[in-house]
Image 1 (tube, rainbow, N blue to C red):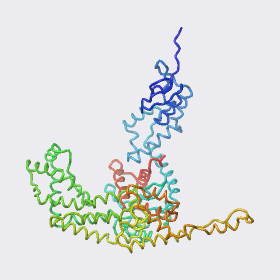
Image 2: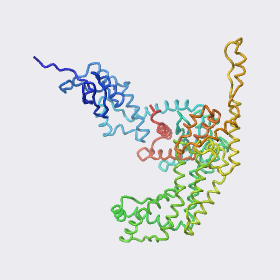
Image 3: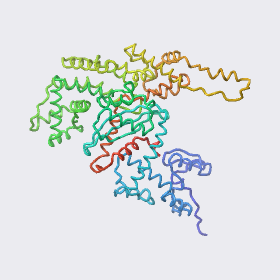
Image 4: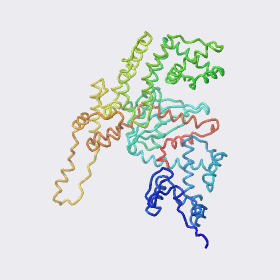
Length: 575
């Protein structure tokens, strides 16, 4: 009698049978109840491991692959057709990869990419670079229309900066928008606009107006615009939105303070000496080889425009000072070794600048509230510096200099109403770090005045229903009744509750309190998304410099702007 071959479910390729009622997943080890069928196993594979039956090659009891059904074969061919679902999914993934990873369009014609796609999706027809370019333009139009709608009516914080591409000799104005979406901080690169005239304040203001108009952003939506301290770009922001809306970049202000400190005569000579030794190692193959054998750490060369690069250079130099000295003594060179006193001075410089370096990192983020941290950061920097020991005259002089510079440049930081209101409405800080009670009181008055403005704009809908209703008089009274109209009570109650933990997210905290403090909630959602620095717009140009390389030096400004927008969109909103 011939042997009968029975069908075996694809599930048993991924499960090991335990008994008649359960099986163990070979991928994650979880035990699944079977009850004599494979339904639970299929659900587990599909929901947890994304393995579907239709994607598998059927097998028989003997382990021999069975031929797929005609319907499944035709479905597979259809999915990989020009308008098939799998083809569309791969097309979108390619566009996402090119934008997010800053890949050239020609990657789809590279041998490695072609081999990869032929391996994972043999039926997929690999597109040309021209087709991918077309897809990217279509995706840009689709995303721009979608996000233009999403930005309608939202409170927005802008950052703006200027960048010059040395390869193409073009200048660009970068603009990023920051706002709340689904209780999370979100950001978009809404402009990377080529500048064709002198970078005067009025011209930059005109370009800013064009960008806002293109995105249908009303000036009343903009809570703040953050730029560096450049006269022209600051003037452009003030012309467009007014001086009260403009915020100077806090990270840039820290940069000015730190650069002034390291350029002082008492420390500049020692730093210059360190810089010379680092440059010698970077240019000497023999010295670099010796250092590589002695340690896995490499010396860092500083960049004149970034003070923190000098900080990192000193930090690394002190970490490998023993190996560096040994190498300099063992090979011919004309470098002067640092003395013990100079090493002590570098240690003091590093200690004094550490609070500024930490503050720069904190305020440079864009996925969490930063404007509300500025006033607390200034308070903490002062406190840290005052507590530092100054056992040498050089350390004492530098400490006094930093405190004077901070007072000169940031002494009135609490009087900046946007920063003060953001701090008061941050549930982690409130009034804790205010040193000036008048500035704090002014910020509270500003919040109250905003409440009154919002109240006057609210329109109470007319009473609906039968005018002869018994309850008609009640409806008329209810229209005028607002139990939260007393803003003083709401603010006082909010300020009395304990501070939330530092690790908490003030945005999610406010979501849980919006029924208790509905008026303050609206104002908090307006000021908490404000950026404390213009670093996000600077990051745009870091990405742009990677896009405009020698292989892509003919890319148009319009396409650059499109790629930068798509790159700034989070994956969950891209597809």
